[in-house]
Length: 244
Image (cartoon, rainbow, N blue to C red; front, side, top):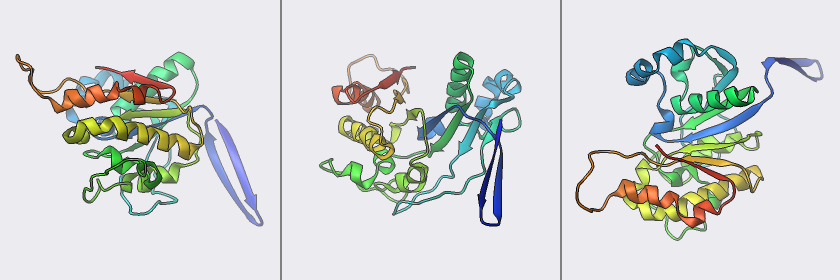
């Protein structure tokens, strides 16, 4: 770890225990939010939690909030190192993602956890990013267009990140076909904000859910999964699709 001193006039700020490595922005809704506070998760991964002490894996948790206009800062508790005492606040998906990267590359991995359960993609997209869409459905209050981007993403720009890990879609299943346009717009929007047209964007398709049916029928979850494979998304640059 490094220390940094910043001096201005008579004032000096010292920042200690700084790591330099990869930082990933992990965002989305409940499947990204799900943490080790959840009893089922904690029980299923008890051995992983017990062996999680690693100062090279850290999480910065962005406070869940929504705003009508872009914010410049957010409340934060600082970077927390992975360990049995701190892991309950870690996104489980983000932690295992970070651990996999660390085990492969052996460099410090930071995850910025900016996620909010029960939210739609249009709330995570800026006003500029939504202008290209013909119709944006209005929702209240945390699911109104742009409000999550304004509160939880805008303050992060232009913090240097290696890429984005995204797990969302459940709350867009009622208009699943529109996700074919909405999701590419979100990706282009975030890449534009970070000034990187090839910023890696990893996304997880929605899993199989509920009881299977024996006869062909309409299924919104399946339609949204299909939307992830739409050519507009897959031709948007370096994208990485995961399936479960």
